[in-house]
Length: 281
Image (cartoon, rainbow, N blue to C red; front, side, top):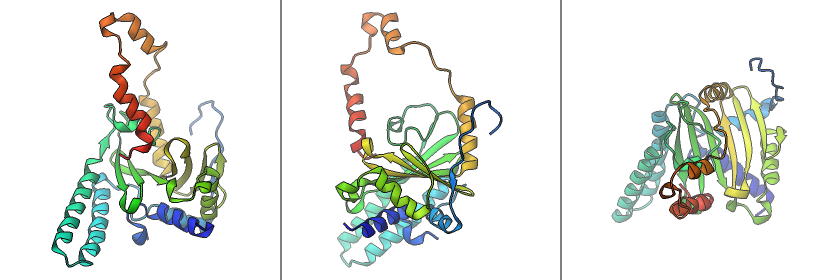
């Protein structure tokens, strides 16, 4: 795969992951302030905006679902029109209905109940009891394995997390430095830190994250920084105090032998965590 083809492929995937590529038109705390992310030039802002595709910050869950369903309708309409076989047409209609159902069923409100996402590629992107929720679109057609996570605060879209499978590029190109270099060609130089690089443009903040070691994925996060600041404040206000001591040891020593946790009983959970990076949701 040539470098030019790789750049085009990755940027196309990043901009249009959710089927929309063709349609994409501190108060004083006493703590040392972190340097602000580098601002991109005017010519790079359009590239950042394109990452949003047809989606806009402030959309509700229903708005996002409606946009995804519309794109699925259009995509499947083209496939159905391309064949005269009745059986194939019916199969495509069933596939569309199932895919639309998966989108709606992927919605989760983070209200304290543990979910499969609490140990996952996005486990640092949300918190419980803070008015946060999420919707997922997973595109796996044609051998792809890429996902866009829609994060809501008080039922308004404020962040999207895009995961791109590194298997779509050659082995020697599966490195964060390579991916970051591609993004710099698109957005210019950002604020580079260990495992990430950040770009800021007015109401957009874009981050490239290193998730290759555990999840074999290139990741981009597009955020409304003003809302993200409110989310951080809410998380801080609702943060539970840390409990002192080793809680597992405490549970074992304070209860009788019949109540001690069994490692065998947790085998399925451990297997799931180990396999999680390779198993799509």
